[in-house]
Structure formats: structure tokens, C-alpha cells
Length: 298
Image (cartoon, rainbow, N blue to C red; front, top):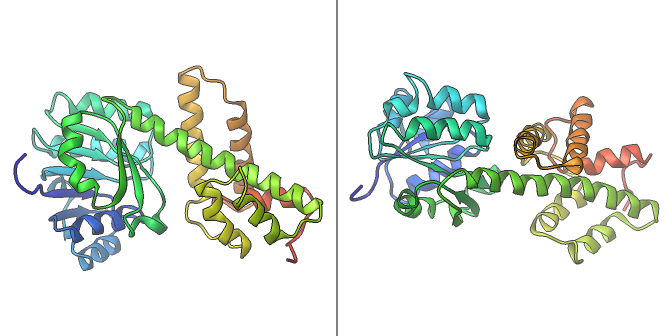
């Protein structure tokens, strides 16, 4: 690949569109496709060339996809009419979805004989910060493909971590999301206990943010929790999907995960009570209800 690569983008949803926009703003020609006409029109307003179909977007030097789940990736990438069948030999397929290692391996098996360099590229962060360029990406696959794509990755991420030649990036993303889910549940239990001990709501949030338990996620969530804002940056439905992927990978690898199974049940309860579209920090409110606590007064 010589010169400035042409970029294809499949999946212009809440996360895909701001990422593709940043790449276009960095000076790359981005040809994008999404089955939803309104998303495609919005992408055109942001400097992305609308593709007539996924095949046109796939005929570029580096083709990204950002899709909701395993089923969507299989449908988009595999088969006679899929992306891999439309891509040119020598192109790079940079797949940015959060999917299982199993479906990722299926894509790898199809990409190799076609002469396509398959780069697993899940991103860490959410749609609310994607437009700022502060996402992180985990990468695995051919090192030469990572090196070729890295200038493009730098347009929408603050850090790019290459982890190996196989599906290492998939496991890294699942491991990170497991920590986020478990932290959300632990915060719920910690805050409920503190309220039972008559500690003020904002006081305890400040304690957590300035303690040994503080993490970037804890600090990030202190503000919304102080205002009791559970509007979604990453929903409980999405977290439950990822926990299912995590548990599936754990079973395949014979890794015992009793805490993860309990965490998944917490999200199942929240979804069953109608909170599936609430932010993944909703276990805080869920534990309060179980503990007989209402809304905090301070």
C-alpha cells in the first residue's frame, strides 16, 4: 500500500459515525455505508462519501466495520456477497466491533485465502467521547497491517495497542468490559452500604473518587451519579450482551467466573424490570431498591 489509503466504513451508528467523521476530518477519503438511510445522509453531511452499497465501501484500501454483534458481523463479512468477497487482495480489514473470539476466528479463516490482512480492532470508550479522539483501540493480527493502519487509527484514538498476531485484541476488550461491569455492581453495593451508614450521597461519591478504589471509570461516573443521571452512554442491554460473550469465552477456555455469572444476573434483573436502555451504571439504583432505599436527599 503506497500513498494515502482510501478508507471504507461499514456501520455508521452511534459509535461508527463519529469515528468515521474523525478519519474524514484528518484528510482521508472515507466511503461509508449503513443500511439506515438517515445515518447515511448524516454521514454525507460530515464529509463521508455515501456508498451505493456495502460492496462499494469494501473496494477501498483499508475497510473498517463497526457492527452490533456476532450475527451482524457474520452477515456483513462472510458469504458470497459479503465484505471479504468484495475486497481487493492486499487490502486491510479492520474490524472494530465487540464480538466473540469464535466469530472473529471465522472471519480470519475466510480472510487469509482471499489475501486480506485481518486486523482485530475493538475500541475502548463510548459514543459520547468518540468525537473527541480519546478512544483507545486494542489491535491484533498481522503486525505489518497494524503498522500500515496506525496513522489512520491515530485520527480517532489516543492510544493504539498491538497485542499479537491472533485474536488477542478480542480477549482484551472482553476483559476490560468485564472489569467495567463488575465495578458498576460493586459501586452499587458500596454506595448502598454507605447510605445505610448515614453518609451523604455526594460525600460518599467524593470518598470513592479520592480513594484507593478510584479508577478512571469511577471518576468518570461520579458526576452523572451525583446528579442521578442514568441516561445511557453504554446501555445495560449492551453490557449484558458483552457479559454473554465473556462467559462464552470463559467456558471455552475453562476459566471459572462465578462473580461474572452473578454480575450477568444483576443486569438480567435490571433488564427484566424495564431498565435495559439505562446506562450500565444502573446497578447503583438497582441495589438501592433491593436495600429499601429511595432517592438520596443530599
